[in-house]
Length: 216
Image 1 (cartoon, helix red, strand yellow):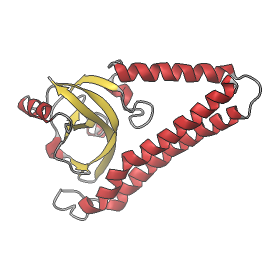
Image 2 (cartoon, one colour):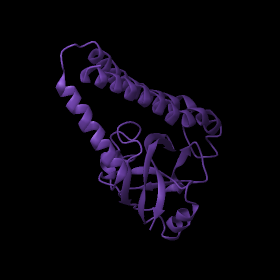
Image 3 (tube, helix red, strand yellow):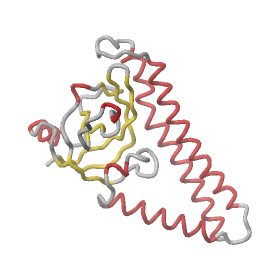
Image 4 (cartoon, helix red, strand yellow):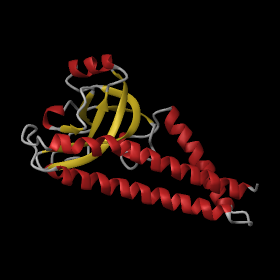
């Protein structure tokens, strides 16, 4: 098998993995939306599950389209008898960068926001949380291990949703106690584990989820 065709097969595999991650990532929010939004008045929300599911569906559709494009390029490469070295080099670079971002916190949290459920899924991150803002947000789904943090404090309401993220303390409950004792102002170390939906009043956003390893 030629190197070009092998590259194509690897790209098809990556595309398939992205589709699976996308579905698994959005599944909990999609399933939980009706249950939570049926009690919207309890949570102070002015929306219904259709709004939330439309947002989730749009995000998932975009991710699937990107994955399909990657898969189609991969399929095209498997049909080529002439070497396509640029694609081979790009795939090798992608693999090297993927290994780097998953082994050490080389990416800023703002960079991770561009693709938390695809390119940067599993990436290691380290950043300063600006506080605990869980009181103003509802996470979908609701989980006692979730807290809503932020990478920065914004001064303009139009920036809402641009700095928030969901912190998942399920693998280290002790870190949650540290986080709470500092009022949410802590140095967070963890891994990007896709996205979660957060809602407030009539606003809904899809933000990165960080599986917290420590909150020092």
